[in-house]
Length: 324
Image (tube, rainbow, N blue to C red; front, side):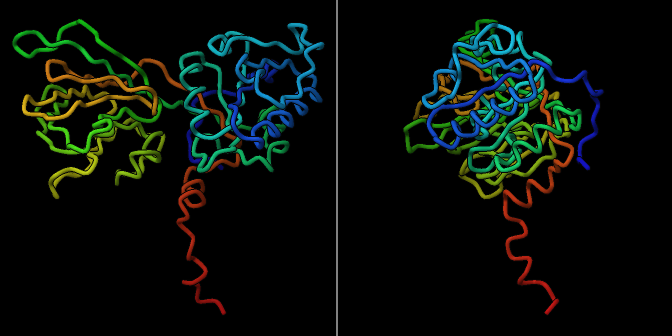
């Protein structure tokens, strides 16, 4: 049984299935074709985005594209044409799908062809079994919240204005980093307008519970259960031994300013996308986004089992066994 409380009632049987993938690996193409064959055998409408349809090796019969049983649409329009989207790839592919599907109320299921697969949790060798279970109504729906950032210009007194320089949204994390520089960043952090600290560090990771098992984990941050309404702030190589990750309420308003003595060009990026510069005359503001992503998990999914298997928590369990 899942660890999640399913706050979403079961929906009518899925009829319009979106398929998304990412070029670059033969295994992804193999799984995409297997998935499409399965959906066709169930006589379901299949919607493929233009980027996926263009992948070399896709066995799509373009003569069958009739707008009913098979349709190709722009990726940004997938939410308008589907009642379920299945993504083949790794967690990076799921992050790309999240940027498109957030706020659409269309659930997303991931088939893992990447390395860890915390978001894409269906193993390829279980594709037929798990997808059929989902199509038969055996699944859990859970919401994952996103966070947003905006860089705004300050006035002459150093207060943020309404002039937005850059903004973006993340499912996993927003990262303040030093780009190609080897210098630490000198920055100040406020939460809900309360001063927290001035820090010298390689940067700061601001992560959702979803992102707590990603980049933030590699920087020493805590694992946060996905159902918690919390945001984690993890300093990257701080220049003090007393600096530790900080977990705050999901409703927190986070503000970061670069100190005037800073010697490098800080950058800000969301979910590994292209970064934007942050100057000392600007303020980085981070808060929860008003859109959520609806993830679909098979009934057998367990967050703790995912941690055990993907993070190898039980790697040496046999060595500690007392059984002969």
